Image 1 (cartoon, rainbow, N blue to C red):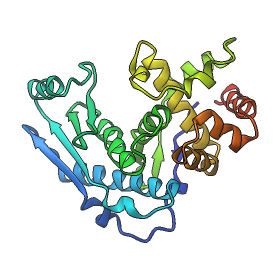
Image 2 (image 1 turned 90 degrees about the vertical axis):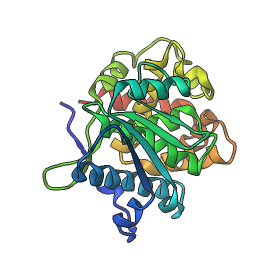
Image 3 (image 1 turned 30 degrees about the horizontal axis):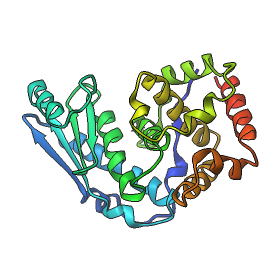
Image 4 (image 1 turned 135 degrees about the vertical axis):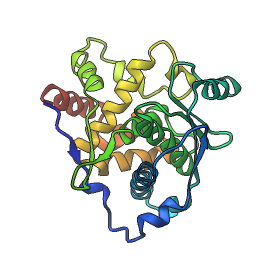
Length: 255
């Protein structure tokens, strides 16, 4: 059984108040309303996204990273926004980097979608040309953030994505994972888009669940220095095969 992952590690020695982070979140309501509780929850969870990025990028600048979420209550308004920006028609949210704004339809899980899209805004603030696996993998992870009844931050596992990864973990295509990390452009969203999202999430989940965000941090730092991901992984783990072995072992024994 996949149990929620308590995220104590996200609460770093960062004494800046959450209310300070919330100042830089703008939610533009388009023919809809949200409760004060919902707004505070979104602001607080995005604050933890900022803290996470502060840690992995070794900065405190994310406090001022602007986040704007356009939230639509009517499907016709949201569809018009999708058409205007040529966004995928089957998604409940999208992010436009050129104007640094997220667009979200107020569905039953709109908070999760808002967290996903907001993370793109924060991530672009740090790493404009980041690899797709990293950008989307972290976004998929961030959308699972929530609070339990006692107010503790946790992440619920995306069981469907994990199940898919476990089913294909022993694929005979030995170059599959290495080739995946070479996807930088729009091809990420091609015919293998579901598998790409599954793999991107699984890599991030592997590092966080294993409590080895230090290794993820090193890979990201090497990425920002211009190293391709496969080379960054090789430098971090000693060899790409070593990483792949640990990744597969993790999912073979993951419950």
